[in-house]
Length: 555
Image 1 (spheres, rainbow, N blue to C red):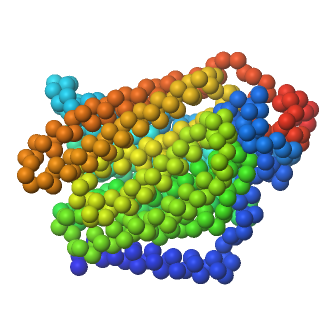
Image 2: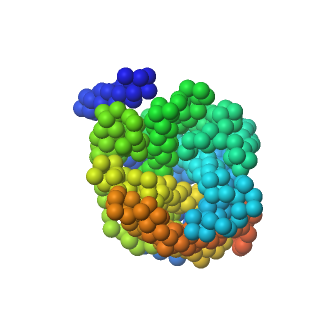
Image 3: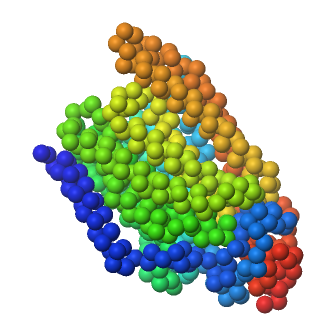
């Protein structure tokens, strides 16, 4: 047994042991599993009061959808919340602004790479425009530019609210962001020039990775400094998710990028150990942490079951670490390693359904609230697609399914279902909630929010359905020994074109989002009264909002 196999086996045994310890600790009361623990994100009398600065609160449509209430915030609760929001406004804005820039860069590379799959002679005069380089530029721009920066930005904004204390050490974020983005620009440029480590998700040269680690450490440091300065006795489940992600990712990235350590089969095992865990132990915890905050916060009701939320987190921690091995079914790896990966992939159904039940029961069939809340619209859809992606991933790990889907576009569609359908949609919804708090301004054009939602939702539906169907037909043709290999290529062409059509709609949605982001950043438009900084202070929401603002100013 080589060292890599031994490490993977030991991590599985540690996971199972940890799960048993967790069950024992819960049974002995070491975790606060009471439903009252879910109330910590609200003020003392705030439950029942909706909050979504992206919605049209002047006509109270969202509150009416959720039900009238006399819930309120006290002056002190409001003051503490505003101080926490202000402390993290600039560092959060820096992260979100850079994330938006990388979203556009990554989107441009994506549509070029997509078109090249069915128009291979398009843009062939320059080496950096070839499919191999353009696809890697897209992947790294989106993963380390858009997704990572959006996740860090949302986390920076959430942590002070969750811990009810100002952000500590904001200056580290600025230096970390500078180092991270200079390194990322160098890494993307190196890929375009043909210098790469040659492994998916790990294409950037290891010399660049050193600075990615340093920049990420600096940006994550304020979150732990703030945690040490917290003013709450209990850590809400979102803190567990975000905190764990910030611990897991540096370990994953560092180990996977150690030069001259992983070769051949060991390199392949480590590649998919990192690639899958980057999605499951970096982006997934941040996305779920955001969803567990914004869904109950917008609706003004606590999460349905706090026990389920803890179960979901710890099962993710214990079960996910080895699922990447199912990408190597049929490869020259020990059978037990692949089987272990399949087992853990199926075990992931437990935390996935814990999340599904919790989010569904929290929304409680309140479709009207989802319609009137832009934040909920994106995040609820993202949460639904998280369940779909996870269940699909577990089934795809089965050998009987994998024999068809492996090495096909089906896998690409599945990866986008998790990374875009789940994580990116949750980040879109989170940004719509956060930006008015940062700049003290409303989103200028509600129609642009609706256009953004429908373009990315419909575009992704076309993209995913087309690529999934084409990928399955491709796999069926590949395993049919009576058909030449080129038949498996030709059958995908109509679906690759549908991929470009769907991708084009998504890119158009991203451009509208970027324009709207710039407009709110510049405080474009007329500021309405009251400013959507707060819900209501000491008076029922059903009263005129202008009266509430006047009372706050007098206070």
